[in-house]
Image 1 (cartoon, one colour):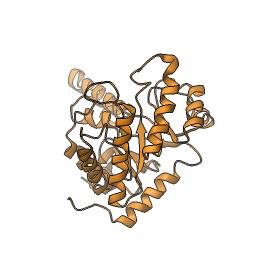
Image 2 (tube, helix red, strand yellow):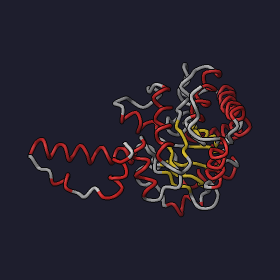
Image 3 (cartoon, one colour):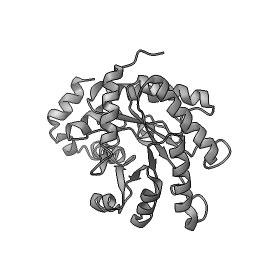
Image 4 (cartoon, helix red, strand yellow):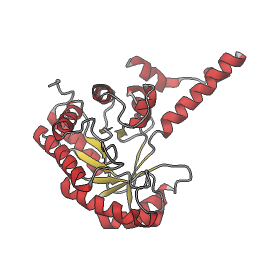
Amino acid sequence: MIEPILDLNTQNARAETFRTLHDGKVLVLANAWDAGSALLFTAVGAAAIATSSGAQSSAQGAADGNNLPRAGVIENVRRIVAVVDVPVSADIESGYAAELDGLGETVTAVLEAGAVGVNIEDSGAPDSVLYDVKEQMQRIAAVREAANKYGVQLFINARTDVFLFEVGERAGRVDETIARAAAYAEAGADGIFVPGLLDLAALRTIAHASGLKLNAMWLPGAPSLSDLARAGVARFSVGTALAQAAYSHAQDAARALLEDGDYAALERPAGVVAAKVDATA
């Protein structure tokens, strides 16, 4: 066991704050990939930090999809928690473990790192696109059991990739998502995350039927936050988008420097926020 980064009282206070943030207006999450990005986002008003597995993977030169070592993911969460004073939710993909015991170990380590929420997805099954519903229920129940043993009211955001991976016939995907949401709620989930879906009518149907806090993810052409709120969305995240924007800017600046000797892009004032990031290194 690694020494926990937060005491239980502080961690549970942050867990309660994180739950409360899902009530009222849409909780907007600027997904971070390391301590520096998390600090930048809290400096401009982020009320909570959620990591993005895809963004973390890009930062380490890896493809998204359970390709990161669990220890590295946990250490990244720990570094983020160490520099921010807001709740942190960790993207643990499908848990970095095939067996339930290993999944419990992942959750315990995430809690030791100070997180108060997790995303756990139903893709990544060894022999199919998605885990069978009953099997995913067991996995979510194992997450809840590990959190209860640890003593933190962990917010479990159950991600279903029915729409992202276009599983089954289009006409049946809303019903399949609702069925999975009901099963995941029974197993202990607090939220249902449906990346790949931004149709307001479908989101409204899922939000009404599931009873879980509904998480939508940004894609080009996404509806406004006010429209998403009216559709019942409680949480809106951006996945890899901010990391992609940051890396795109860096690549363009590097290209201009290397090809043309142009360093105009480097002359943008760094400001106080960048200095704070440097000071924590």
